[in-house]
Length: 226
Image (cartoon, rainbow, N blue to C red; front, side, top):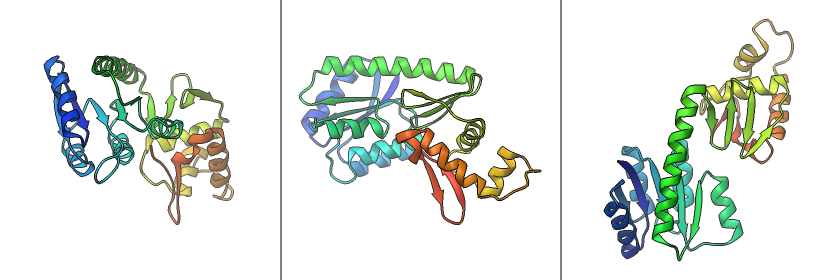
């Protein structure tokens, strides 16, 4: 049975959605009425899918999405009254898999969640077979040496590719310039460690709008985060 988190401050609506998912038998449901409660649940539980409102007491649905995406690749659905293009695009940019605007159909919401779970199960099996590297919307398929940012394949120069691969393999950890030189250029490289900076700049440009996933840590080096 899939475990789902439903985050909605409107009690009647939250209960309606939770009861529907419980009644249909495929979900074990946890509920949160505000952003703080949602974060407490995320801290201690592993979820297969999450449904998030955006306008919440405490941390917003956008905040919760960012934190959840750092911890998990589970599908995330926004269910909100905010239907502007700006909000919808922001939702997808920070890692949502689906964005539904209220009013909505419970049947459609349920069907979308089942489809997302099925897709996630398929991707998980595929990733296990090929050992796909993923950080947010950036993915590397090492067997094919393919890089995708969002839905678009990106063409990287060899050094850019291996630099990204090293960062992805050490996701969330800061790697200093010398460490990156040793891993990508080799321990016998002769030259300035500033070559790393220039290649990071090129790599960010190659990844387009997703390039800011690569963070500069002043006095430390670089890291990649979702």
